[in-house]
Image (cartoon, rainbow, N blue to C red; front, side):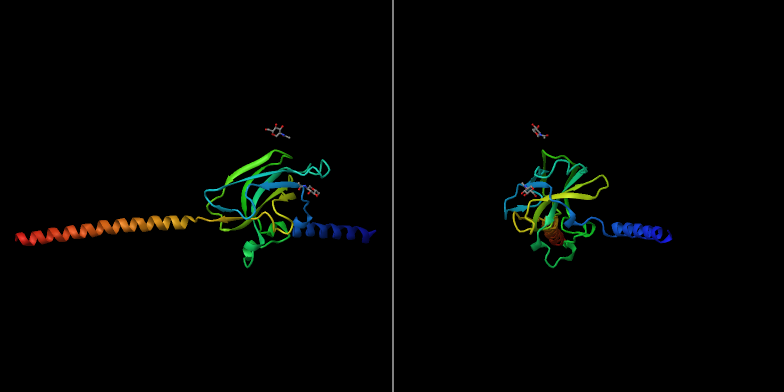
Length: 204
Ligand SMILES: *[C@@H]1O[C@H](CO)[C@@H](O)[C@H](O)[C@H]1NC(C)=O
Ligand SMILES: *[C@@H]1O[C@H](CO)[C@@H](O)[C@H](O)[C@H]1NC(C)=O
């Protein structure tokens, strides 16, 4: 009598520990969403200017009800393997909480099986790189329960390139324009002062 109950408590504790320690893994998710995005394979888009349209919906090949726990979706911009190489801060990790593949949120919305679309202007702070789009479905506990993506499982098709026009360049340009304007004015002022000094000394 004593042994089974303590065994039960122990295994309960262990399973609690296991769930809190590991959480949701990407490999456990079913690819139940069909996702398409407007960029064509290899297209180069400039940030702060170009738009991306993403559409998604439930893949009806799966039995109806598969998505019954789906409550919200997050549409994300994700790094292709080529833009993750030698960058540990973009690393793909199977455990969702540690995964760094999809760092840029495009939009979060309530889940709907069809008629989903968003048009998004590529934000200026998106770094240059090669990307794809992934959509995650979440349940009421805010855990990932399904996904879909614009690329293949190997993440080697339908990739597009974002070229960042950094704000830094713009402000540098503005700074140098201001400096040039300032130096012209200063120079003109200096010459004017010299000239009037000269005139003043001639009059004496
Ligand atoms: C829908 O899911 C099935 C089964 O996984 C898959 O074979 C099919 O390619 C998917 N359809 C689309 C449009 O992705
Ligand atoms: C999707 O949108 C179209 C046009 O707005 C509408 O006619 C159609 O009924 C919608 N379908 C669903 C499943 O909501």
